[in-house]
Amino acid sequence: MNPKQLVGEKATEYIKDGMIVGLGTGSTAYWAIMKIGEMVKNGLKITGVPTSKATEKLALELNIPLLDIADVMHIDLTIDGADEFDAYKNLIKGGGGALLREKIVASISKFYVIISDGAKRCEVLGDYAVPVEVTPFALNISIDQLEKLGCEPKLRLAEGKPFVTDNQNLIVDCKFDKIENPLALSEKMNAIPGVVENGLFVNMANLIITEDGNGNLVVIE
Ligand SMILES: O=C(CO)[C@H](O)[C@H](O)COP(=O)(O)O
Image (cartoon, rainbow, N blue to C red):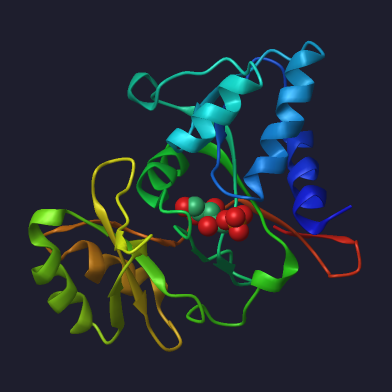
């Protein structure tokens, strides 16, 4: 079984009947959602809250009943991927551009499970550029201010044009060296007017389900 499928399917074991379940975005979350679709087909009663339009589309194709995030105040369990994680469950997310909705969903989740192949594990965050969602109006100001925090900021492009998020914003990928204090950096980035949210997820994950590269699951609690 491929590592993403292995960790994705494992996470679905935490789902119980009646739960409201946050559905993550990306190629690892895909496997969890596929499994949830199968479970729903077999009688599981849950309601999903998608973290992106892409996930909403997939969940609808699988007949998973959905709630709009605008109508939800709490979520029992969320399963989502990550782009980088450390042993303290600090994360970088947003490689797929869904970080704002992902962070909102995570923030109201009682239990937040991250699924990731082992290659994304690091000692200290920073190999992956931190995606930052910015309002288009303040793009240049945001880039300038982000650069002053010590990173190399780059506007994300898709097919030669600026990548536009589900919220009609833009993404600036910020490459830092080692991020020794992700909480402090997250606070500094979010203090910049024009920054909507950043992809550092600190003190949010309850569990990371990953693997050792040889098909064995590894759980970080
Ligand atoms: O944060 C995300 C999307 O915004 C994804 O969870 C993250 O990019 C991991 O994706 P994948 O499982 O495809 O590697």
